[in-house]
Image (cartoon, rainbow, N blue to C red):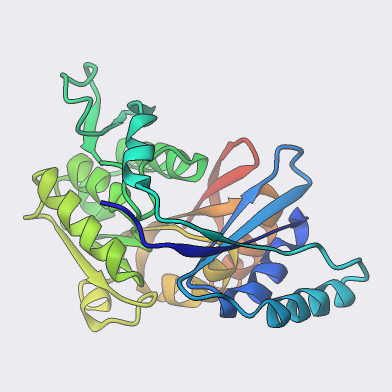
Length: 293
């Protein structure tokens, strides 16, 4: 299936200021991502919009942040992208991935999984989360550590907050064989996650809901949670820290990712204000996954 044409907004900024520039661009786009550049000192911000974005408005917002930070305004590229079969493009390069005991594969790799692994079937999709990104791998490795170190009952129920394709929710359900709730603000991600839950045979364990954070009653009701996984950006993690702490059961653990190493202090500071403290960190390249309790 071909995607619809979209507009792409891109800029490169100092990594330490990534959140500030994301906040400036976010009102003008429908989806936003940030990735560390190769040198580790810069971050590439990319946004996508269905309609042509307000170039002047974006440039003013970016210039305001730059002025506050005493730096020259970074250049903003805005281009139109034609319809491309992104699913086919992604599937062509989607080799199976190992992350701790988890083996992430797609429909083109249905052979027996390696001995001792937990297979998770995720096809390339428009929703985030095929397991290829360093943050997803970090979350899966953190999940495996917790499952090995704690009783299954102490980690239930589990919540995958901002679930994307549902890869973390499915992995948790297969590892724990206990109830998992998954939520995402994006209805496309919710539909994809539900399809993947069925594909993996865990529909009896995983429930997926559309929700902004933990706002939906269906997401809050099953709590308190023994395990909360949130692989999103640093700024939303900071904003959601009070809600995550409130929803976490006494003695529970939260896996937080989607952040650069340079953003660890910011996220951990927000967690400490809610009584949550660092238990472990897993780093891949410039990215971090934090376990707080």
